[in-house]
Length: 441
Ligand SMILES: NC(=O)c1ccc[n+]([C@@H]2O[C@H](COP(=O)([O-])OP(=O)(O)OC[C@H]3O[C@@H](n4cnc5c(N)ncnc54)[C@H](O)[C@@H]3O)[C@@H](O)[C@H]2O)c1
Image (tube, rainbow, N blue to C red; front, side, top):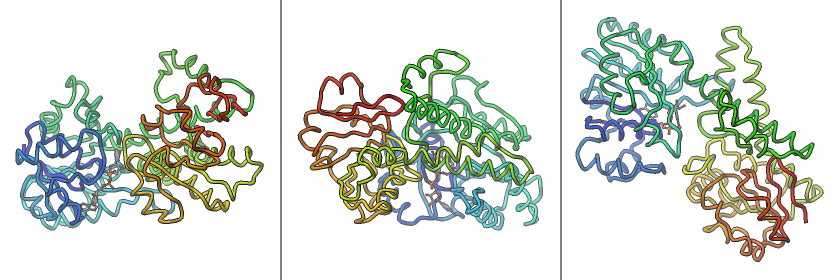
């Protein structure tokens, strides 16, 4: 099948490469000329495990192509996937301008029957808005279909998530489109039953419900973890104790320093706003949003308490700058909130290390902080180490190296990477985990 993808970010490029991998001929359109130039030179524009191999292989087989021209995209196929940004407006609602403007533009250029499939995360009613734009351009109802097809991939695991989709959600009433999309998606699911067909409203809401539920699960555990610290209970025991209940499940129960990234924070806010617009109050989700905001800087509160508020002259090292491991994405990363707060508290000596996200952190903080080229180098003469992202590389540590390099080994572990008994047996290390009693030397 010929397929056109508009927007080659984490969703668009992964979708395009995966469709191409199954033999489709995919043309990716992006407005960013530099990005398209890079991709034409076989350079993947961001870090995503497993993507480079698929990308190069399918470019070589001439099944994955790039352009900046929307006209070429329209000529290439009448199956057009929108994978455009839907960032947060100031009031928390989803900014639909990328989609609306693109569809307005597209509606002036299409000639024959076109299927517009929206993969971006958009509020309920967006498919209806898109249809109206096409009707306003005097395009006959028989000449288009607008479909909601939200994407559930996780950055850092996106290629596998797409190639082995747990489910595909398709919101449309058109049997013609259902047949076509089933044919396209069947190679990515175990069973045809994993392709869920529903109306556009339900499909659009499924994505927000999924992300808000996951954000709620994370936040719930963070609250229990914070309470554990107050009363001296151990979050690991509680996680096991509840996780073995099959109604609860054992995933996504790890405490941390809040969710970040380009999706959960904005999607939670957008659902709250959509509710308000419909005269509906999402009490739970509002609480989740508030709690998460505070959670992002709990490590700084612990640092302040440890040093009796006297931190301006301390050298503070951060391990992990991306919002989660296996990505270079720093959007809404807790580490960036931490850096922001440390700077506002007058800390002048902050050093950061990350296996992939230094460049993106540099473009935000410039020379306000120092960047290290290795995890151990970042610790030289440091007064405190804050672990913000659970990169595998950080799990494997040489405690002697840490003790040797830091002024005094004081670790604030926002991701519970280490066995507390091992740290205890080492001596000379002060260790603040999440949801457990600290080891204070
Ligand atoms: N990132 C994720 O993990 C993820 C997962 C599921 C859903 N989503 C949703 O998918 C959508 C896209 O997210 P993303 O992370 O891929 O975004 P992104 O910011 O990484 O990529 C968006 C791309 O669109 C391009 N673009 C902008 N305007 C354009 C235009 N007029 N024509 C062509 N290209 C244009 C940009 O240059 C960029 O390459 C969002 O709605 C997001 O919420 C994201």
